[in-house]
Length: 242
Length: 120
Image 1 (tube, rainbow over the protein chains, first blue to last red):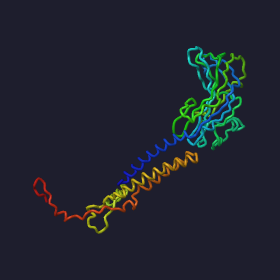
Image 2 (spheres, rainbow over the protein chains, first blue to last red):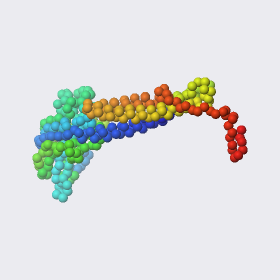
Image 3 (cartoon, rainbow over the protein chains, first blue to last red):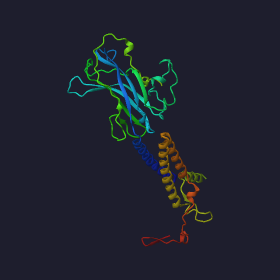
Image 4 (tube, one colour):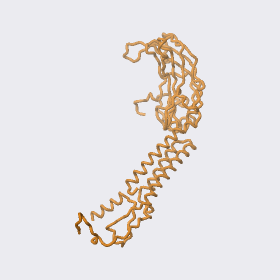
């Protein structure tokens, strides 16, 4: 510690040690917050239509358009070390050949920010807090947290964000499909934890969050385009200036 | 002139924890400055204690207020404080100067032998 340079090195070196230990402590402190998620997920309406994967494609595939109701309470996921929670609704249905594992596809997702997370345009804005003028009104994005208690969400007759199809292109009249709520908790410091992680005793199995099995209907001939609109999330702005 | 300026700049940059001999010692040229080992030990102790306390306080305050930004602020603030306390050569680091023994005789009086021959 005899010269300035040595002292700077010494202080900085010990600072990195302290910062690392602090980060470990913060990551481990998550264990002390019991998690008790609960959700109710209901299928509202499902339609199967023929379509193309993109405009110039000659391939015709069957697309399922699933509407659902969701009432979830994930408030127990939000503690001081939660940056955001990625929530998704996953449809799983048996594959065309019985020997294959079931297929899974996400039909809707959202990024729910924690209280301390800075505003970002990819974050989910609940329908109630959307400006009434629709998309065209370029109102200021909320600079403050959307709610003081993030994790509460009630969606009624929610349109999907993604229409799903099967690898075979055939989805109509597929039986025994379910919708399931999944999530990924992203902390400021520490490990990501997925819904099927279950590594800790304080993480309770979710209460509900899965629909009764349903069948995909036959292809419908004429549907109004309005019916088949998908919900564009915040990340629909990707690539455009925020 | 240029040498003196350079010398000052180097001292400022190095910021050694040293004690300068009192003026009029007569040996300023020989040992311009002696190390203050007590001061260096104190600097080391301050680094360890302040940074450790900062880490503990940052965690506790953040946990109690449930705000990770408090942890960040306290942690970085405490680190800045430690840098401020330790890095500049504050006078209190130089309060335990090493007392050197007085030189015996003069430089010319030394007998230096190399291979049995006397070298002036």
